[in-house]
Length: 158
Image 1 (cartoon, rainbow, N blue to C red):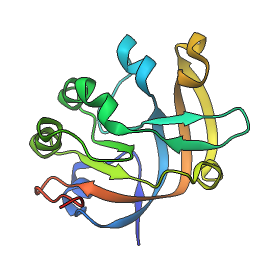
Image 2: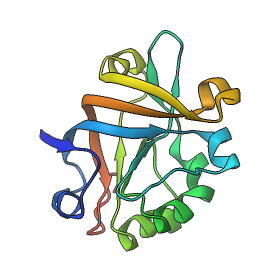
Image 3: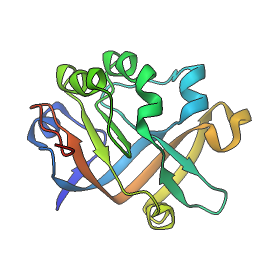
Image 4: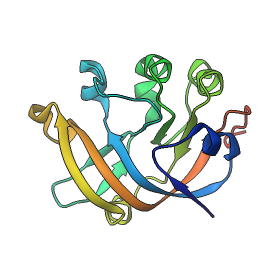
């Protein structure tokens, strides 16, 4: 299992390979459907976005990433280095992760309580009116995931 510090650096991204088990530690954004539709208006250079639905009790679980596919390529163009969610992505998005030298991590659905224990800080930073779909800035420690797509064309789903 590899320990990966966030925000991601180009050097770390180069070393990650599809299938690597990782423990992510550091800051990342949380945003899902409603926030993506309004626009992710935060600095994204080397940042990671977790497609998730937090709950008031502190659990946080991945949502289906493919719903964010229409918004992903513009975020990669703006410098996003990583995304975390569940499930496969479209061919265009998969190729864009490679082109823009970013990685896509997946985690398991159904473990929101476990993932919630890795969150050490959480703050709403945009769209508070969206409630659980507001954009959050969280700090995680030892958040478990796998590299699904790497910058070398690797794909855990193949």
